[in-house]
Image 1 (cartoon, rainbow, N blue to C red):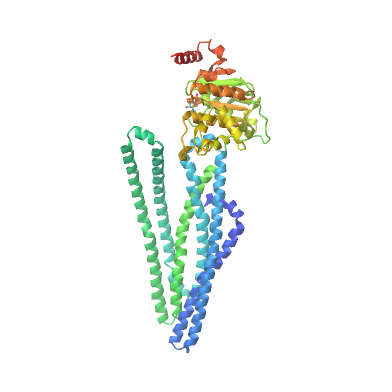
Image 2: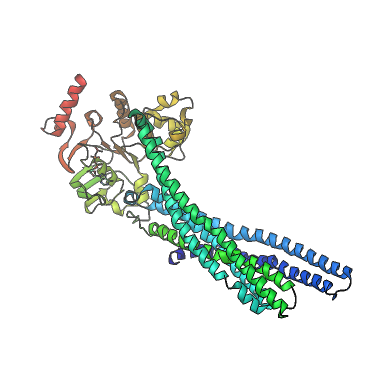
Length: 585
Ligand SMILES: Nc1ncnc2c1ncn2[C@@H]1O[C@H](COP(=O)(O)OP(=O)(O)OP(=O)(O)O)[C@@H](O)[C@H]1O
């Protein structure tokens, strides 16, 4: 139970509703059980009439009519109170579920990129959905049934002991066995349903991947192979489901068996006692039969609830594990900073935690505010890493990164990030309209501003060509943009953000040289007062940069302007000659 302590703050938040729920539950159970003594009473009245103790049929009728009226009244009140009970406990559990999901989601958003690399997306999703659902079963049904079980048991036992103390002992004796057996079955059900769930996620991942990769599957003619893998997985899933059903099949027969035993005990022992005159009225036996049946579900639910609580505790442990994870990148300064855009790296070395790859070694350079820096180098040289470090997606362990001559870690994180427009290598667009995707860079942007940004990214004409224009929906529900179109929408998003620092990570690779020229020309105009860092493999994209650095295996091997570099032997000159020849061919 120790992990569930995390939820105490929510219990405190909803304490009044829970308290009201408790009072309503107690009242509901008292009214729900009230009909049993009345039935006992009515049976006694009939017995007394048969024995001649009540002489007139009229008196018997009146007594029965009063009892029936009371039973109907009590049942109606109990039904209404039960409705209110669910309205309090279950509604509180839904509210806490909502709060908990928000808490986890907010925390996920604060965690650093490293966290996302170390943990699989499926796992993150499971903890915020499946695990929270399990915790909700503890918050709602488990607590509600615990309260009802406790109240019902106390009320029933008081009624039973009052009517016949010794008979009570015999009749309730098998019930703990019922609770224990249900607990055992619930645990077995839980184990097997976990396996069923695992198979289900395997099946889901498999089908999702095969649908996403359908073009590859078809072009390689792999449909049959994929189909047989799916059948294998489905067979596994079916077998595990059958295993689960086998255990579930025990649940109700076991309950019926144990209730049966209790009923037999009531009739046998109660009957004997009545014959021996130890019990005065036959109504007591009728009452006991009803009590035993009333007790069965609450007692059985002890086992079920225990297993629910155990599952919830395990789930909460998984949730807490992520909630206790501290963001590696933290804001160390509360007051905002004005960013002008000067960037300097001083002997920066950087190693990725997860792969232990040293991506940058002793890197030093400086870009003045408003200047353009270009980075070029072979694949894996560390170019993207430099951009990620400027956006402080990671902190460096060796050396220092300065923005406007201040250590990047001492700047207000929001100010820094709000002043950066980052276009990553793989343009990511949301499954939403093109307009919303561009507006992501500036929520308050007007249509004119959106068109202007798209024009500067040379994608306006393409968008206008779609039948729904800027309202065209992208992604699974909509159209798929070409690689170059995606890159340009992503550039428009960065432009509309109007940041002080623009970071372009090889984001013109999928556009033709003519469009590239056009975009670069536009960028030159709009980035006059912005610092721009462009990563590219094409000399044409970077030749106008104020400074160019050439990276090799994480080290700067050359730096200078285009005119300086083409006159030096090295990678830059080789690439330039190669690309010049390609153009001429
Ligand atoms: N998120 C990451 N986690 C671990 N290692 C990484 C990560 N990103 C990059 N690396 C490693 O760091 C090195 C530098 O990668 P980086 O992406 O910076 O190179 P790049 O020059 O941008 O390459 P490309 O031109 O192919 O994009 C590579 O060896 C890469 O495998």
